[in-house]
Length: 340
Ligand code: HEM
Ligand code: HEM
Image 1 (cartoon, rainbow, N blue to C red):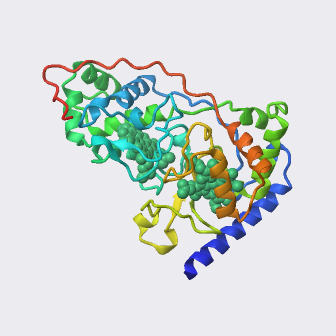
Image 2: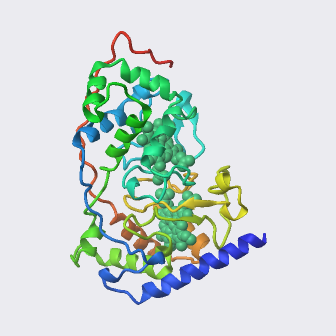
Image 3: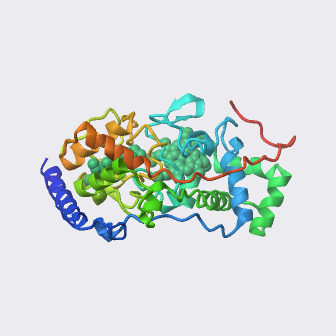
């Protein structure tokens, strides 16, 4: 189709431009990328309202927000495993196989929008989705509130955080979003290097970073999250072959040029967030890097080059959130019973 070729040409022009710019920069401070957004070190999140974050953490781990009483946010975004489920596509209510890979919640506050197609503008808007999604937690917001309201400790906690007697779903999503905003992973080896510790990266890791920059990966994977800040076509040079029915942004906009445009994933902690791509079809980082080179840039890396890029990507693993598992307040005789 004509539109596909045109789109590919503009994408490539952008990529070439930024790759050229990137070639001139070899000092950490000069890392250049598309839209002039450099890869920058990230810092631990500032906790503005500790009580709200604590409440949000409880809600994040509470399976009673699902119809079965079995599925929590942490089921699919497991904070022991890089904020993902490490499955190609998630398992939801009644063992339903979901349509798409679960992205990590780590550093998700840095995303330009939420979901692969960007259909939620921020974390608060996103958090209402899974509770009522029939394929995920399969509950309703009303029933979730009934559960919370039947538990005196939750009632008290909502009251002290929000100052109101009645709770509503906006408070639930505010609290979950406040907790998610704390899930930032600073201090990766690459961040230490960006901050000037020239010994933080080994030679092969540095060689991988050079390849990442000079080949043009940074055209799309840039900014503090090394991605997450734009929507790009999957399959710029060559089409992506997949069994998945996901259409990317076109599902929302109904525009042909948005077909297979997905949010560029963050590459922070990518070592932990396998398998890769929206369909979870790439099992290893080596596979993902090879596919990216070929489909997005028309490049075939040697095995040694791929190994170096993978070594670099592994330096993006940051300090994981240190969490104390929340103890959830017990249900009461009035709490609606789950429907397994
Ligand atoms: C997407 C948080 C429950 C599976 C997301 C995103 C966030 C998030 C922030 C967007 C990340 C991004 O776009 O980079 C939450 C919270 C939950 C929750 C706070 C609890 C209220 C679940 C559950 C499942 C799940 C229980 C699995 C059954 C997914 C999937 C996506 C996603 C498959 C990608 C969907 C798409 O892009 O179309 N979640 N999640 N989530 N989550 Fe969850
Ligand atoms: C996904 C690396 C170039 C856009 C990914 C993933 C990796 C990666 C590891 C999987 C992340 C995940 O699923 O969590 C690279 C490398 C590149 C490169 C090493 C250079 C060789 C590019 C370029 C673009 C781009 C130039 C934009 C034209 C995307 C998009 C996805 C993605 C849209 C998601 C695709 C999907 O899930 O269908 N990249 N990337 N990447 N990258 Fe790249």
